[in-house]
Each structure stands twice: as C-alpha cells, then as structure tokens.
Image 1: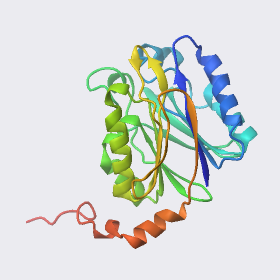
Image 2: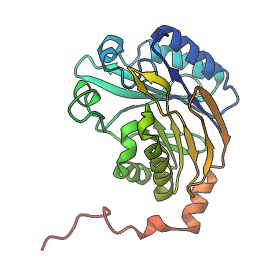
Image 3: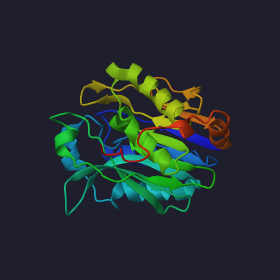
Length: 265
C-alpha cells in the first residue's frame, strides 16, 4: 500500500482560496497512491482562531467540493484534513473529511478533544462525540485530529472498532515537537497499528508549526519523517503487518482493564 502524507505550509500571505487550489493540485499529483493524507485546518491555520468563524463552511462547502474533485481526478482515497465546519443547527466543529477514489464522501469526523483549555478552539468549537473508522480495500483507518493524540483511550477504542491504520491530521506547534514524535510512536506501539500523522508547516497566527509529519509501523519503527517545511512523504507499507504483529506479540489479548464493567462490592 502506498500513502502520500502532504505536509502543507500555511502562511498568512496566501488566501484560503489560493491555498485550496494549490492543495488540490498537490493531491492530483499523487495519482498512483492508495491513500493521501492532509493536515488539520490547513485552509485557515489551526491557531488562527479569529479566522474560524469567517472561513467556516457547511460540510459540503468549497473545500469539500475541491477535495472531492481532486480525489476523483487522482483516483485516491483522500483524508482531506479538517475544516472549520458551520453546522446550521449547532456550533462550529473541527471536521475531517475522507473521500473515496470516486470522489464520494466516505466519512466525516468531528474532533473530540479540543485544544485551548479556556480559550481558542476549546471555546470556539463544539466537541464531536463519535468514533469514526473507514474501511479501505487494504486496511481500516481510525480517524483522529491533533490534540486527540494525547488521549490513548480514543485510539484503543478505535482499535476495538477495527482500526488497523491510525491517521492523525494535525496543526502541532513547534515548541512541543518532541511530544509529537514521542506520542506518535507510543500510539502505534501500544495499539500495534500503523500510524500516519500529518502536520502543517509554516506559521499560524504567529505560532511556528512543528512540521515533521511521521509514519510509524506497529513496532514503533519510523518509516518516514518530514522536515520543517512543506513536503510530501511517500511511503509503502504492508497492512498485513498489523495482523502479523498482533499474532506474534499478542499484547492486546492480555488487556485487563476497560473490557467489562467492574464488579460492585
């Protein structure tokens, strides 16, 4: 299976529409890949909080249309990163979109864990509540977004739902880059899964981005990692290694917690 992880540079001197056209062209260049992954909130920047409301889109908005067409043109499964979604009946959401090679929407995931504590995304956007997996011919994806990476229970639940390849779309700050790599490897190892983590480059609202998108195998080995700037990581991996790893080292079968409710005294 071939995956292309596109680390997009998000800078303030480029309009959202210009970036949307540029990213669509980059996706089309990945024809021949099985899966293409984009980062979180690449239309606005993950830290450009004041842009969320101005640039929010309905689910089937301009980014949806551009990415559906790009996926169809390239003939790839496309995790199109996330956009600020404007729900007419609710708050804004940080919503990821996945398209099939025919350009049909295969899944939408509303980010569950919002970053910011008492400001930023945490107060400007609503929290998603549903786990999302997507069945591809070669593997089952488990979807997550940025701050989700710090919550291992989400990833264990995705594995319980059948995920074999974990996808993290992110806008991670440079000042915590060491956590990015550490947590990516930890989530892959503890869930015996491939993990594809796609981050942004550039600067969002004065916040330098980490870049360093990464692909990790079920043993925690780094198969590929980007640098700090805009870059396309292309990696080939065997999805069958997940089942082989879980059979060879069946740690997931030894779980004792979280499998059933505790007995009452």
